[in-house]
Amino acid sequence: MEEITNILLHTIQRINAYLSDYILIILLIGTGLFYTFETKFIQIRCFHEGIKKVFIKPNIKKKENKGLTSFQSLMTSIAAQVGTGNIIGACGAILLGGPGAIFWMWVIAFFGMATIYAEAVLAQETREILKDGTILGGPVYYIKKAFNNNFGKFLAGFFSVSLILALGFMGTMVQSNSIAETSSAAFNIPAWLIGLLVAATAAFIFIGGINRVTSVTEKLVPLMAILYLLLGIIVLIFNFKDIPEAVGMIFKYAFQPQAIIGGSFSYALKESVSQGVKRGLFSNEAGMGSTPHAHALANVSQPHDQGVVAMIGAFIDTFVVLTMTALVAIVTLYAGNGPLADGVIDEGISKSNMITIAFSEIFGDTMGSIFVAICLLFFAFSSIIGWNVFVKINVQYLFGKKAIPTYSTLTVLFIFVGSLFPNDLVWELADMFNNFMVIPNIMALIALSGIVINAANTGKK
Image (cartoon, rainbow, N blue to C red; front, side):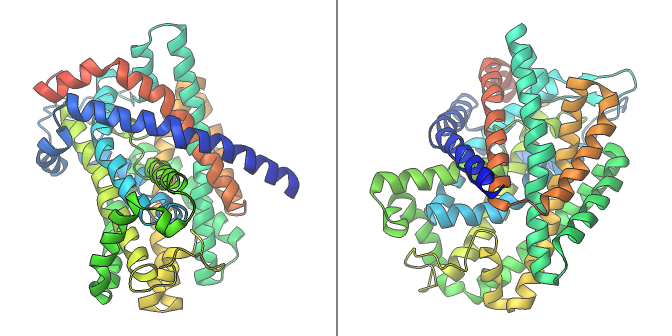
């Protein structure tokens, strides 16, 4: 069994390497650049507008559907975005690509804010409202609009299947695996028991439908973000003298990665950029086609309104939460002659325990492990319940509403199994299906660019 697992792991790693090293870099950065210039840098000129619209109640005279407020949609979106990618994913990028990988994650996120604006606008433009007021929206609907033929149906189906596997099954396994690893180490509880508790709690929330999910996310997301940022700030205060060096390392090793991770310049640069793109995608999900499902549910006056709100989600995810992880890790483990300053990775340091070691430098081994376990529990669990909303829309699209209970049962099972599954294989499988989602989604974004550009330039349909 171990031999089969290793063969499968190496095969998937090759597929992911080709996709993330070449295809995704071109698609994600290219699309982000395209929309950044075509919308006249909307992520800058409409940033303040997005902040205001998050907290201002939209001018909707009558709520005639089962949609959400703009804030609820954003919290559901952030719940999905802010997960293990912001902690374990960021640490993995730093370990493999050096501190400079964070710079490339910033680049992806900056241009990704324009991409995610486009996704939200198109999700609003193409959403469907059923007779009972239920709203269905997301990439499958704008993919079909972009390619109104059998090819469009194929692309929409391919996207839906990829999303169900990526988020509904493999993604939940990644999240539950991370919860089980950190919680088991911090609280000395068997991983299977943690997996069982997480699966049972998720099942309770899933049964309550979209109202229960949004009720949880709009309270959980602000709480978990504030808690994590406060803990991070404490670490930075204790290491304030090393912060300039840590920030400098991010920029220095973005362009001189061979100096920290070894190998030739071309190899090191490719590794740094690749890790930044791959983990950046898993973190903020811009261009992947997941968050548009949440933004389609928002009751707003016009698509542009939710588009600018969606940009704020990507900003919070990467430039706030993920950056805090990066600074805490680099300032404690790299800067100031830290244990990883020369780029040599100790056997006891991995992407799974790197941030725990960083927090333990200040809080001690026990409290550091507990803090990280609690934060990761919040982050990972919020992703699980946010993704559930997205996947259900695609399950209904492919198989009808009656298939949703079957899916919910299966995903609860995968949550439990994920707590016991090998970590590396789970991550690689999640990456592969995430990568597959990008291709049809980006094709539709480019095909329907006229709608997005008009919304960005006029604020109207």
